[in-house]
Image (tube, rainbow, N blue to C red; front, side):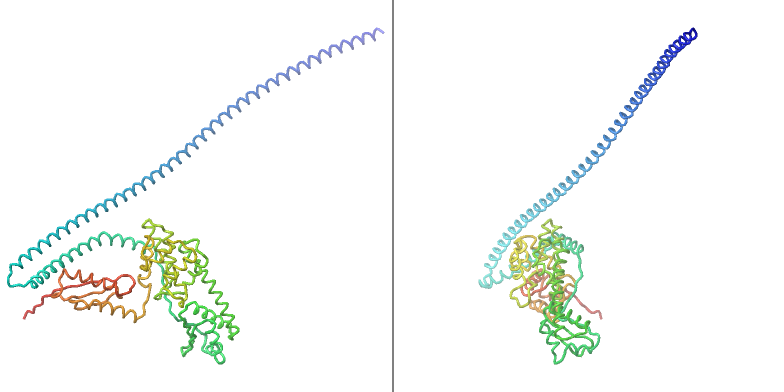
Length: 514
């Protein structure tokens, strides 16, 4: 019993001891846990502060970078704006200088005109005084009649006037050449240098090569039915002669010749030559020509940069590929004139698009067949009006040969470019008979004047050299003679470009030493 109580007391005592030891242990664990939590909290707080500092520094750095980038962009934009402003100021200054120069030139010309008027008035007064002195002098001569006195006075007056006119013309020509020719030559030479094109001559006949002469009989056909079919369907003359391995297609219509050439070459390649096949090949050739005409018209628009042209006008332009003028291909000529007009208009500050459009369309009237009545200028104007072309373009086309008055500077450029393209070396060819007749006419005009000893048309008729008799023509009168001959040539002859009239007066003294 006693042992039981002692055991129970020991158990209770041990339980109490273990209970307090457990409490103590849990307390220690709790304190350790609290201490660790505080350390972790402090560490997290410190890490948060470090992260905040780092984020702050990164934000500051990013802000600085953004500021530097914005600053660089603003500086770059500012430099561009300053450059644009500087360029604009330079252009304004250049234009202002040009305006000042033009104003100075106009003022100088006005002063020159005023001086010339004063000189002319003075000369008129001097002539009146001289005339009066002549009258007084002749009145004192009793032996001379009134008619003789008038004749003597007019003779003296004519000599004085001829001398003064020659001097005045010479001075005016020198001034004009110095002021106008220099600028005009620079402008034209610069334009021609910037644009050049090749030239292709065409004739009224086309030759087709044959693999052998046996094909000539097959092309003629039984009783000539093949050749009759070809000539009927194409409208050309097929010439088959003794020339080996060649046949000739003759027609003034180059489109018909081209259709016949394509059809015959395909018949030769196919080997089957009979009326049915001939008709089939000719129809295919016509379709190919139609496509070529459209492509050539579009090529002309592409090479010149002309836009928004009526489709029918594009086809009419393509037809010019098969038209020639004095051997010059009209489509290539039109493209050349258009580009020349554009370059000249750009140099002079005019409407480039209008000039190029008018230059391309100036010979559009030549696309009509030869059986249509009217000049190519009249037909071209009617065609452009039919397709609602602008009136500015129509007026340029109407005036490019001087048929009507020029209504704009662009129309003058079309005429100039047309002359340049037609008169440049190698652009056109003339038949020998026409060439000889033109040279003969030049010399006839020159030889018709009194005092002319000999005249020679040189440089393919672009210059005529006149030798005068020195005992009949004076140095002063050759100026008037050259002007009169040039005026008569302009009135009576038709020629491309210009003709230089060169009058030569030479006095020689020859003596023999024996």
